Length: 399
Length: 160
Image (cartoon, rainbow over all chains, first blue to last red; front, side):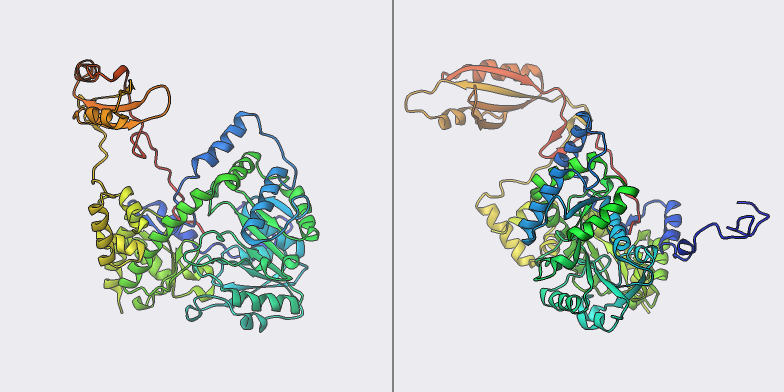
């Protein structure tokens, strides 16, 4: 970039970066990254992924695929065997019938699936309604598709569940879709069937598309996850976005899938074939193995998360950071009100003074202010030590 | 019997009652009762430690001995196994399927001790038809724990 010209301007005075991208706000945790890079002995509760390595039999399937020479492109939609396994899996878990030939697309994680879904259905200025605190990619992927993001605040009083009535208040003539992500990142909240039924009714009455981010669907504790696509009349209008990252500890493989009506999958596949071509074949081979025989490993990991969840939530409440009981994903979302600090101040001071990294709630939207996200997909010893350090911190800053 | 308490202890015998209570949501009293009961019924047999003696370069020899048995009248495998597992050198003893009958894991000070045990004790038993001794050269994984060379994979400290 030349010093003689105003920053980001070309010779003709036009902005180099598109307006759409220029207006996107950068991720709220970038400065924490920089601080962390200079520190040692930090316990991080700031991660958003399992601490388990991928179960070996799944990794082995990917490795042996490479050994056998499976190093080529696959069908744009993903290997047929994988789509068949996905179809079987969704049928077994939710009683949903998706045609592997036309209603399933293998994507580079839910991240790509979400982007494709948005671009496939959004016209300029179309609105997408979504509960907040929200996963950080929801708003940007809406904006990048040319849409408008309409957050619905949720509160701890309702256990961070979104209510149909609050969604309905925000429905306009431009509303195109409702985007749900439960079990929720960052709150750990889960939805109840009755709430989902009301939202489903709303979607039908206003003819809205339902986008359901199901990445944490297998990580629930003591409750049964209800998939909104499985409610009557909802399959046709729902885009089910699923993944392998969290349940099978496969974040680095970058593989997920979308299941929806033929019309929508066809549209998403169009974008996918021009931008991504296909998901790496070794990840697809590992995913097939995960679906065929990964269930026991998932169960074991979920049992382990559940123990850490109890320790984390009990510990946070015991040190004065009041925390509602999260029943899904692997996050606790305690209030930091007792310290009188904002969520960013809390996170920054905690990192500097006690070497514990958490994510400020405000990174997940305005209604996350006053909370921090603590991931408990971390070794129990580290969780216990983090809690000891946080206890000292809270004692010192109690207002 | 609460299996979860046992699963937790099987992974880490040093975990405290209070910690188990926090992990399971059971009360400390319930956890204590579960453990006491399991100890009484010998569901929990013993609390031991996995030690990698190789690290201390201690002279310690381990071997797997395949033992072929000639079953004798009125004496089942159990009785023969007992005559073998009573020797302190026999660390673990299993009845197995396949070409031999008993798998005997031996721990001893020197190779000579193992040889002596095999030739003088095992082979001397009337019902032992034959033995094959495999000395262990290097341990990789023991009781579910990888002993050496496990590189810790670092995650990105912050991800959303």
